[in-house]
Image 1 (cartoon, helix red, strand yellow):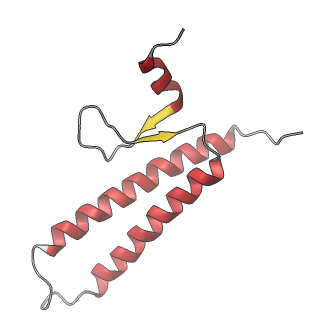
Image 2 (image 1 turned 120 degrees about the vertical axis):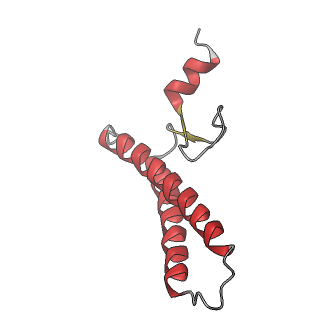
Length: 99
């Protein structure tokens, strides 16, 4: 019988954006690869939209404290999107069509 840690290692992939020792946010690698890919697209689209906002922002009107908040959100969204893309790619490369 597998232990909990072996089960986690086999099925669940922790997100790299977690800054804690236990990394509580996980990707279920057994989920449908298309669903994993859609989650990645959502995060990367949000990251891109936020980056566009930052690019268009008038810094004379912006609060200086907003920049670190925006960059932190960009990091989280982009890193999570990247982690999801890696899992989706691994799943799709090993995917076999049902017969």
